[in-house]
Length: 179
Image 1 (cartoon, rainbow, N blue to C red):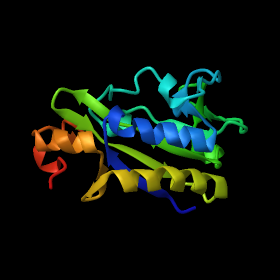
Image 2 (cartoon, helix red, strand yellow):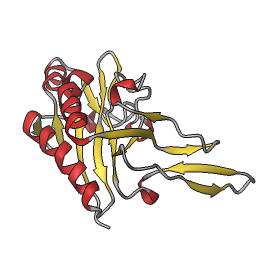
Image 3 (cartoon, rainbow, N blue to C red):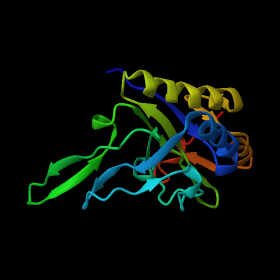
């Protein structure tokens, strides 16, 4: 499998019309990815149903909310992951859901700090690649590329005002996005 991904800096306003258009044209649903204690799966019919979509709850993009995006006609699958100390956790990820992409919106962590996001897929599935292409093309068209990142208009204004655009706010400032 060959992975594809693009990295973004945006706030919710940068993404709002892009995601509305994506949902309208792709008939998708969303699930939080990760390891969970229970096999009950929280589903979002729209990305705008996600309560903490407007912010990054942590300053590290590796720990931000990741959403599995699949077609509304598809069922999400989970993997049972035995734990060394006993018990089982339930993983929701692309490994067992190849007809999907992963969306991490990132966002404002705190005043002056904007955390990066990403869109990606590890799947060779045609539907997965269609979803990825539909979303990434729109972002590439409406955002400005700065280095490896696509930066939304509001995020670019924040950069111009001296905000830190980061993958991890605890990293030295030398790792922040620069022009």
